[in-house]
Length: 163
Image (cartoon, rainbow, N blue to C red; front, side, top):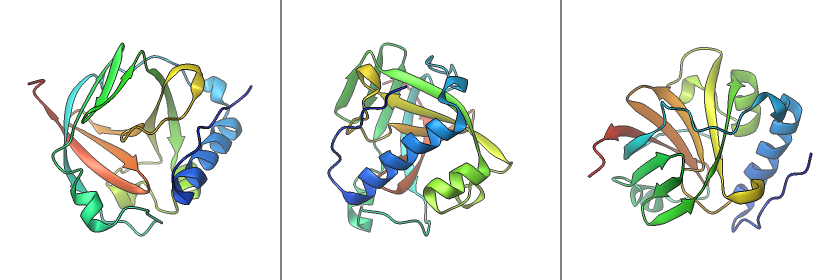
């Protein structure tokens, strides 16, 4: 199995990409599948940046700029604000709380997910390449909320209409 990582623009993004790749290998990426979960489909509007203690490369002002951002997911397209991925690849897996804590130095509970695991969706452009796409790592919180990560900051988004 081969992982190709694009050159990230920050040390934290690069470290996170390497850590996610290592976790995928350790967790048995073959247990993941490449189909968008139906729970992710549709429109999501970012409502808040979560206060966490993990390393972040966005300032509070930069994080606030993402509030109100709409993310849209369908099998043939992923959109985050003006960023678009055509024919995205969705990799879905159950991430254990301990693996999440190792990767992000915070717990699932810190971001509002109770339980010992969560559904994680990693979104790639073609050929498993990570991409500069705010929202390329999503955790399904419940039917009305998702959490997405960008440069160490976790954001919460609520389901919205597609308009």
